[in-house]
Image (cartoon, rainbow, N blue to C red; front, top):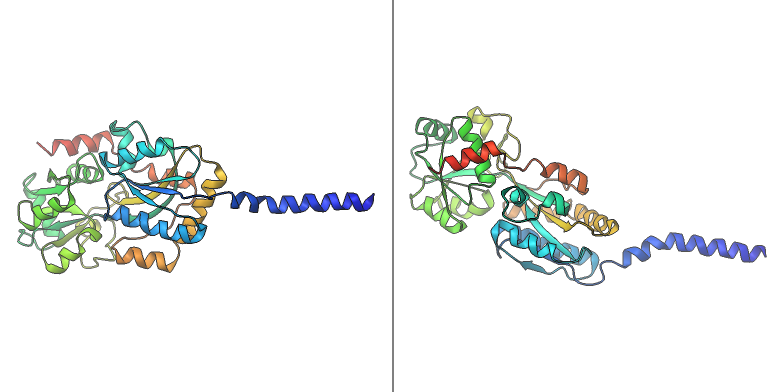
Amino acid sequence: MKKIFSSIILICLIICIAAPTVSARDYPKRPVTIICPYGVGGGTDIMCRQIAKHLEAKFKVPFPVVNIPGSSGGVALADAMSKQADGYTIVGFTTGMYQLGQEDKVPYKLGRDYVSLSMLNVLGAQFYSYPKAPWKDGKEFMAYVKKNPRKVTVAVAEVMSNDGQALGHLALDGYELKPVVYTKAGERLSSVMGGHNLVTMTRYGNVKDHLKSGMLVPTLSLSNVRNPMLPETMCLADVGITGWTDAQCNYQGRGLALKKGVPQERVKMLADAIAEIVKTKEWRDYMESKGMAVEDSHPTPESMDKYLSGYTITEEYGKVAMGLLN
């Protein structure tokens, strides 16, 4: 009888120890789709495809990337929302998409309807100038803008966006630029290289080839410290502006999220895997080669959502930015 009782205890212990392994092997057991909210070849697409390669190596299943652009990421959010909350659909996002719900463009909000897995990289924005612009550095640029309100045109993607957040905040500080909207990135850059606009607001990875050719000139980093990729370019602190948050500085973060309702063990499994991947030298070297700064991963939904909650376009900044169009 004692032998039978001991055998039962031993079996129970084996089951308890083995249970997590069995659960872990249950997911993923088929391809996991990553939805990229923008077109092929852009920074978010590069990020999605690179993380997919690492996740495939770790989980031994395909992680195909599907590009679903439109409505500044809103179409991708809607598509992901239509899928089951089972962990087999991941959606890429940018901090700009976090603002969509406020603008009533789509009925979905990242902070409410999705669980954030990780921030994969964070990119600070800069002003890049036409080579023949009437300033030589960031200090002269800001002095010129202040002296000539709304005379300096800046090519931007959208006004009610991260770009508008920064422009609105600059205007309240006494620096009024006039935004000109171009939905296509190539048109924004061409408008400045051709002298139709004097500056554009974008990120290093989008213009590094044009900098080498001298067709664009880095002028001012919208950050509290100098960008390591552009150490000679002045930052806000160099021109006497301090205390801006990441959102006000027009930092653009890129990350991954799941529809709410996915079993917590699957959320944790993916978040832990991504946190491990983004700490590797291979990941960091690749991101830096593409001109993308890397920030430490935020693996828990709580810390991610707290971080992202700062990326909101306040009514004050929004109204100011829209007013600059007139």
